[in-house]
Length: 183
Image (cartoon, rainbow, N blue to C red):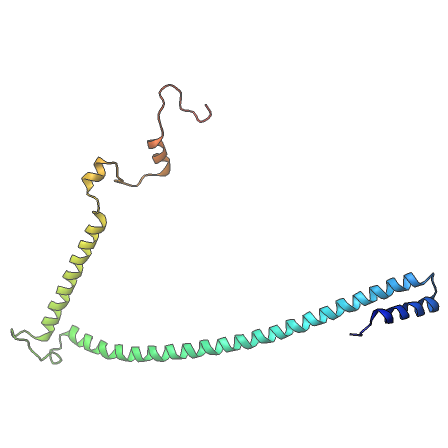
């Protein structure tokens, strides 16, 4: 803005005192101060509006970049899904042939004379039995870290109990006074 030093302001004040007069000078000074304040507020509003517009434009550009990135990711995922679908459809044909019992696909025989299809069924049954044994073992380990007889003897949880029942169970009993909340 305008570079006004102390000497310049003093000269302007003396000239204003001579031109305007001592009676009207305080009113004029107040009016000049209010006008200067309004001008500053107006300039601050314009500056904030301009910065807001700039930020809005930057956000729009950022949104556009994010949408383009999301679109490229979507396309790459769709392409990979298409590849997976193609490989699954090829495997599905093999599974359907196996389900229908098409033995031309499984013409190879193992050393016992059984065909590969029966060997594959045996392998899946063995796998399921192994998984079942593993599940039972994990469940037993999870549930029986402490034996049931020990839980019964030492007051371990046997069943779920509500908070009110737990409070009633462990509340100290006094035979001399009646059980009342306020007494």
